[in-house]
Image (tube, rainbow, N blue to C red; front, side, top):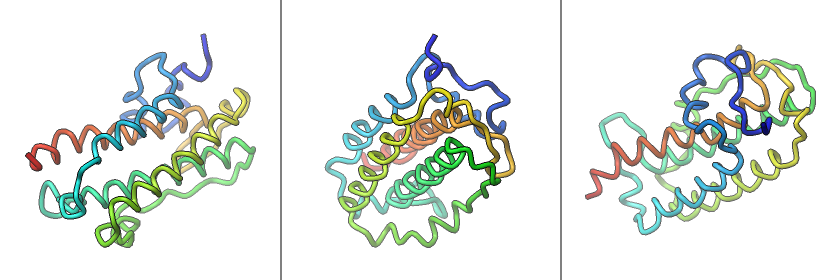
Length: 178
């Protein structure tokens, strides 16, 4: 059995993150899923205008652009956590206020093409990091947002978080675009 494709045990992450971990099918490589999602996301957003990308499926909800920048920001945070813990740093890592990040992102004023370029750059960096890690590094554990987390769990949370948003976009946003 491949250690990388074995889902992390429940003691490798806080219960809150289970909804992301469970998005990755058993036996599936989370790094491969990140590669697949990149193509999936581009296919989903191709042909979308900047005006359409400012759509909110309900009052007070994030726009498509804001949600995409949130996905990028979260990937950055999770990747930093993976890097820090993989390198043996035991400093507890803070949480982050996703609402503050989004409110100050300026996403709706940016062109969608620029946001997608940023997404691709972050994804390339995340893939390079995860592909460089030995199995031993994946077993390392630390603390993030006050909860225990392993590098392997973070490698699952990365595509799991994006899968969560891909599902929301398909269910709640795309029907509004007709």
